[in-house]
Image 1: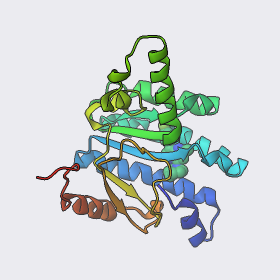
Image 2 (image 1 turned 180 degrees about the vertical axis):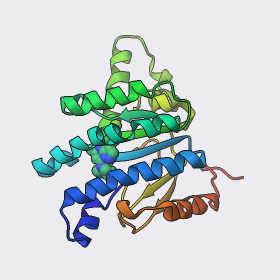
Image 3 (image 1 turned 60 degrees about the vertical axis):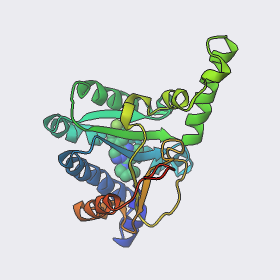
Image 4 (image 1 turned 135 degrees about the vertical axis):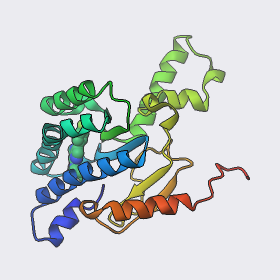
Amino acid sequence: MDGNGRWAKAHHRPRAFGHKAGMNNVKTITKIASKLGVKVLTLYAFSTENWRRPTDEVNYLMQLPIDFFNTFIPELMAQNVKVNVMGFLDQLPEKTLAVTKKAMAETANNTGMILNFALNYGSRAEITSAVQSIATDVAAGKLATNQITDDLISARLMTASLGEFADPDLLIRTSGELRLSNFLLWQLAYSEFFFTDVHWPDFSEKEFDQAIDSYNHRDRRFGGLK
Ligand code: V07
């Protein structure tokens, strides 16, 4: 969800104004995705590298999940959406962590779309942690080397709870950035990519439809031939 800062600058407003608009667009796109029948919508809200931003901005960003749930939980319930948060959650401020845990608990029995936030997430750290957990099991004699498979590694990643939807079909990146930036490195191995110059607050139903239409014209072969 790139481009909140650039969007604010273009409107001669502070960066926080862009983040607020970005958060409101999370609500808009969640509703559209849920209506379209998307099974899992994962949103990259905060990376492990974002702590390097000015303290004021980090503090503002950490407040956003609180605002988000205070205003959006009833609609999420009405849409039968289940909230999930993945990332290194132990490093989040206490209040931010409390509100995300509460949202997951309140929506735990919803059976519709999973709205999955990547919060304080970084893919290399995720893979490192999975490797450590596997090595611990090998050292303890609980796991043999030949039991380390593709599926076992997937099962130790933060997306494991998403089951058959752990690997995204489509990645959308906004605001003209053409990098992966440490997002879901393992899980995106065979995903289709869609890039747009539109800043996240302006990413609307029209752009979402364009991304899905583009996806529908791709020939997915997963390395093989049809
Ligand atoms: C954030 C708004 C969207 C654009 C990206 C940066 C700013 C929603 C959340 C959120 C996260 C977890 C959660 C519920 C809501 C959020 C941050 C930033 C840190 F459980 N938007 N948003 N979190 N932005």
